[in-house]
Length: 116
Image 1 (cartoon, helix red, strand yellow):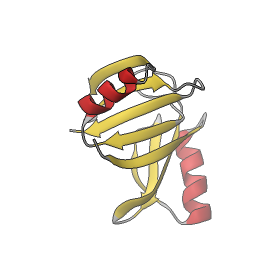
Image 2 (cartoon, rainbow, N blue to C red):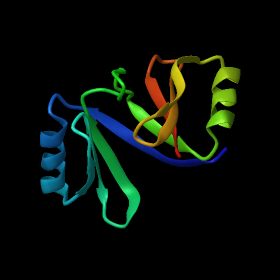
Image 3 (tube, rainbow, N blue to C red):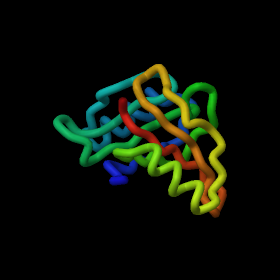
Image 4 (cartoon, rainbow, N blue to C red):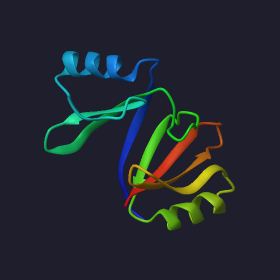
């Protein structure tokens, strides 16, 4: 399994407004606005990325970070081997990702995802 990127999730009661703030202040682009989550980055790549969100999607709690991998099944095996609790999924979401959430040893909610 290879990690492709790690993205922080900033909690926001109004994700589009917070995204516009960061876009204005730091000159970031908004490539995707789903209402409950807004993706920020730079045109032409994912070198810089962050998200503002109300929830984690599908009515879930907002994870503190998203880790994109190239092999979700291998990531699940590794998480289970580390005896971390998987609290959501694995599930295929209607917006084109397959993912699961787990709690790390400190209790942080982590989204592990692959684009399909």
